[in-house]
Length: 161
Image (cartoon, rainbow, N blue to C red; front, side, top):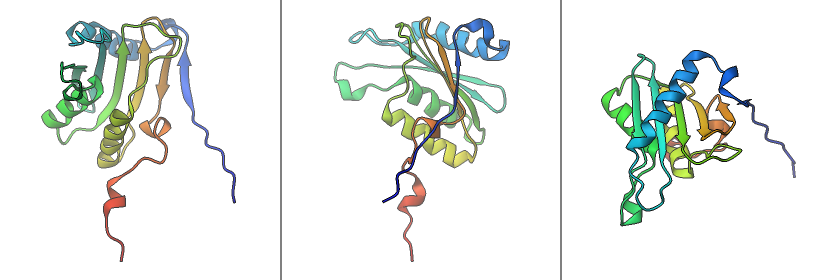
């Protein structure tokens, strides 16, 4: 048996005063987009902003449905829209914001992490993840791999032999 340790590195900002203006602009746009969330059941509004390599921003919000499994998270709404509209552009950053305050920002669910991991693999470059909830600290991860180590990928579906 081998015992191994997994470490992740991320940046934590206690306030927006320490963040460069470009990143602050992305966060502000994502927060402004929270009003477009459709969350009549949970009242938990989430916004996601994808910054594409061509400089375009693609926004998404969570979309709930009375038949709960039929809704979709903000992250997947934004990523699917971004890759549908700009299939040959890489996603550089994804900003995820919520209205609710918590000391540690809310992070993407497992399904959203898997979708982001798929696109990182497809574009062969990392997608930086920025998280903020209300007045929380801001967390910045270099890649979804920091939030989803040992992710499942398409290469695992290929037959060996």
